[in-house]
View (cartoon, rainbow, N blue to C red):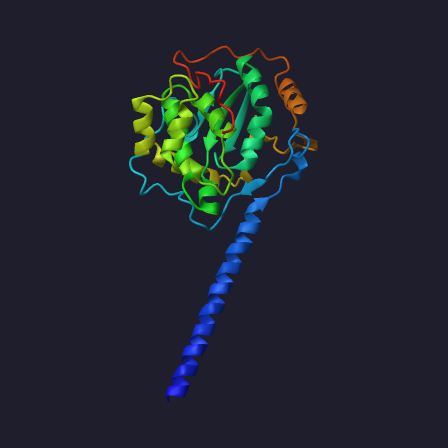
Amino acid sequence: MRGVSDNQERKRGARERLQQERAREKAREKRRRTLIVASAVVGVLGLAAVAGLVAANSGEDDGGGTSDAGPLLAPSGVQGEEELAIPVGAADAPSTLTVWEDFRCPACAQFENALRETIHELEKAGQIKIEYHLATIIDGNMGGSGSLRAANAAACAQDAGKFAPYHDVLYMNQPPEPDDAFADNGRLIELAGKVEGLDTPAFRSCVEEGKHDAWVKKSNDAFRAGGFSGTPTVQLNGESIFPTKGKEQISVENFKKWVKEANEGKPPGTRRPAAPTGGGSASPEASPS
């Protein structure tokens, strides 16, 4: 009888090892499917490489729920459906640039770092307004909480009227994708020092308490429900423009052309909020460190 029992134990152990290996292989395959290489934009943006669009991770828990995130407190000045858009620019600008981003997303940083000056130029000229939406898909894909923590900190910066410069600082100082450095609130507060007037007791408290965590998770829920292919998702007046608009690849020149075509015959926007939305400026040292 002992021989039969030992044999059953060996078979059970073999089955468990096989199940574990299958689970590991399934996880590896899922990670491979989540990376969509955006090779079309290599060179077009003048970049050495583009890490890729990170596809929405269907079926895996990425912290998208709001039940354990405390009360839902939206940052000041948010707009749009369910108040999930952070606006930057004149409210009456003739064109709207809608951007869905994750602060841990390498392709988002590539997009931002390549087109930042152009976007700011067109926004300041009243040609476009930007509506930023925050997602946290890489926390689910890679593990960690840096996407959530950085998004909450950016929402705290919105409360202070300094979302835009802090948003830029985060992308200029983005860690490598596997490095969850943004999970450290201390690092996020340190980077706030690169934005004039942002590092205040109110901002620190907002970051450390996760004041806007539930709002960020609600935004991520909206991203997942929207059927978007990945981050960044960039739309000009509702039409996708990243990495291409129709058959044209995105570039600084093409982006300016698309905005000019969309705005033909329309006056620039001039109606800006009395209290600055995305005001302030990044300090000269706001470069990768």
